[in-house]
Image 1 (spheres, rainbow, N blue to C red):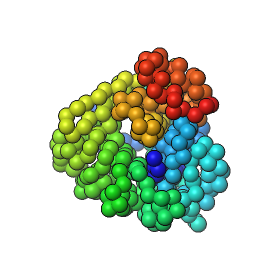
Image 2: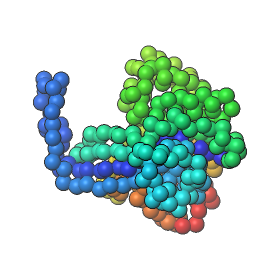
Image 3: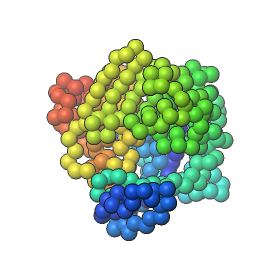
Image 4: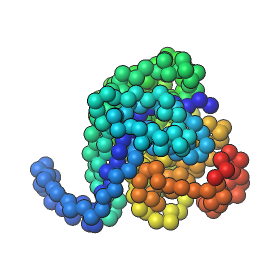
Length: 326
């Protein structure tokens, strides 16, 4: 299965605040907020939604095609992703801009305040899928993750014209997109990935009801934080999957991306939606246990053992036959 992953590539500045953000909020004064938090931890890590998804897929033995715009500081990151199984040969490299930067502070309750500088990502609108597919062959599936909004819409339009399955993942870019743009992106998608807040935002911005949004796609995958995920289909069928028990909750950044990487890897392996969601949840658990979105590691034996503990031996056996020998 030939899979393209379109979206952002960036550097994550991850900071920790040893209190609760809510303690600094004053009821009745939220319309005039001016806050400063003294952080006691900072680490700079590789990130970006498309890069995180592609990295996770590469860690599971796939070779996803990264479709993204990156900056003049790309070479080290390029080598890293290539080393982990990602095809980076088709990225657009800006001649003047730096790679996107994501800055997030996490408090003791795992609440987050984040900012994003797009940098070279703004040039993603110049990426053409046709020349890429002339070299790679036609894609079977394209993941359209947060990116320059114009690029997201162009990729979805071309995919529909070429009869390429779409996994729409608008995520945090929904805040920037109009209701009409969100409609254009998700209409006709095979899969739509959202968390609960993003689903509520989609309902608000599009004016569609929950049911009307579901009717635009074949399957809707809603992540539920620590409660796992829910897969819904147009015919009314619903599958719910719980999360494995984590060893520690270190940092939630990138958990959603890693879930998507596992879910899509499961699709590539021909697994059921239940197994896909379980695989995504297992990868997400590894991510929340580490600082950084691409810092997790596992051996095949360890992965199968934890998967078995979470979902049973039969489920683990289905996964094991597809895992690379690590």
